[in-house]
Amino acid sequence: MGDDILARIAFTGVIVEWRGPAPFLFVPVPDEHVAELRYAAREASYGWGCLPATARIGDTEFTTSLFPRGETYFLPVKVAVQRAEGVGLGDRVTATIAIRQR
Image 1 (cartoon, rainbow, N blue to C red):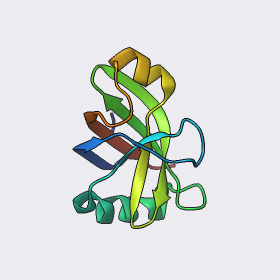
Image 2 (image 1 turned 90 degrees about the vertical axis):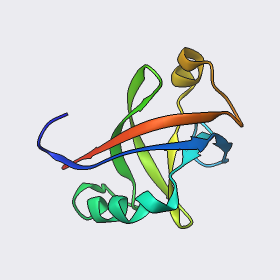
Image 3 (image 1 turned 180 degrees about the vertical axis):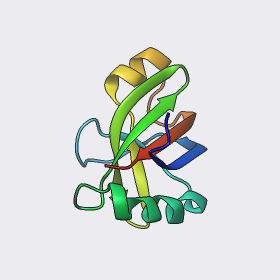
Image 4 (image 1 turned 60 degrees about the horizontal axis):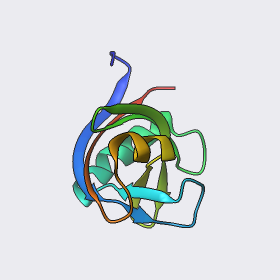
């Protein structure tokens, strides 16, 4: 990851279901990281507060977008990531996220 990184965070959270955009399983970003993501959103958001991100859960790296939801952001857990890492609803995972400049 290069010099264009606006935010880089690592956190642990529980996978939850939300009937928003597919894939329906997400990890909420803990409160202590939200301010940093909101600051990065000033330069990175492409609309509606969504943030393009590179994420990693376990050994699987993937591109995605964080979705604002209430007072936090949700990290989507793609079906391919669920299968590769053997995780699902209710599982605790550790994730890293990098937000880049657009």
